[in-house]
Image (cartoon, rainbow, N blue to C red; front, side, top):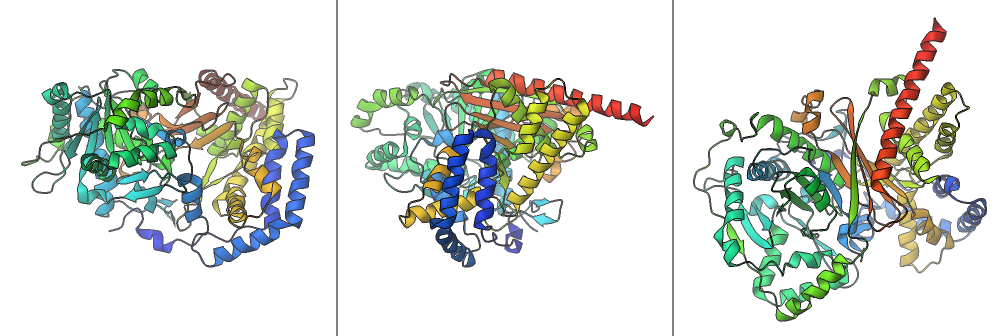
Length: 619
């Protein structure tokens, strides 16, 4: 049998970086539409100087590194792209949002399903090699080994330099930590025979933990150390050192770090409550964990991913599959657990309550720390969810790929809302290479600008607008293909930047690339429709669309930035999530969501009118 990373030895290494001039030109081409003429000329001059002076020497060093490494990017990307960040971890969170319905009528039953499914697919089936390798069109294997870091993974803060990453094989420990109203519990996942606890037993234990008298007797909710994980890394590292001075606290930190994941139970009753809590206002996450699963008392679920070691869109997609399996196979039409589907468990251990022993100095400063976190303008986000009916046959008939088509419409929506062209970050995949992660596809280009301006000109005929849309989408497809084979520019320039800093080589051009060149008013991503083989037949039925995940949430890193994630569910529906920071006066996620939805309706109407006109002309 094989598993999701069993074919990794077949994967080729990441190719050597593309020609230096090619990467520089690709970067400049993506920046030209969003820079003033004067600013672009300055960028061209810096690029020309770079190509004449420090650029070739830096490129030679990077090329030599690529000759002696299966992947010249992987280690640097994890260390300097993620773990070296000194700002708050939650700012780079990716969230996966459950369906706009509860999995079961009782929240504890929903919790039992999600804990069962999470452990089954991310621990048990990976460890026992029951999952087939993921591939492109069943031919090209993909790098999936990072999935094993979803469970058992924990980021450890450092006071200087780079954070470390601790990973524990979750199947050896076989427990999760449950966090309820400041209480922490250890929930074991196997019975006395080593069999995984079924959803019914897990639901029973979750219910008992929530209702236990011990929560009332030992309530200490005013002092919850999960708050510390919301701080900047240096500050959190200092507080963690204080915690480690007490053996009981040291044991608590290790128990949380080694668990498969952390399950958080919140008080909200509705889907809207769940969406509001995703705005980080309740301060309930253990931000260092690779995976936090959140459920409220209404049974609505979402996940939070610290994705330094795994790309979160994959996680959101797999959770969509778990939601769908749970709703269609593990729950009756009355919303009750279908116990006939479960293998009974024999004796199983009870849960354990875990206790902190917070030092007096931490308790004294707790209110100040909490105020510091809550007052951070980057904390609260706004989230808008929209659903759009899509006609994929109409897109295909006009010779466009769905993803590049969606991108063109989103760019137009931004222009329509803000009256200016936006640069954007759109990750493409390098997973067809050993240890491959992502590459920025640089989706902004001149054909896209031509399409946007045409859509704002009512005097132009429909045929011309459709032709420009096709050119925009096809150019986007070409850029994405280049990125997926190692011919993108961003990771290449990132490698040069790391070498320049490591060798104290000044470079005005690289400094420009990693300041203004990385200013992205739009951060977009697509979630795969499905990842698990047993779900593919379910997504062919549009009746299951409401049971699929809403998709993901791309949390903005900076003010005045949107995160947009889109996910096609079943055959003819697409969910779109738009996020911005609540402190921003320039952006508004709800207005942007309305604009995107309206733009999709207008573009589909355009395609239909143009097709009808073409049919009439052929007669």
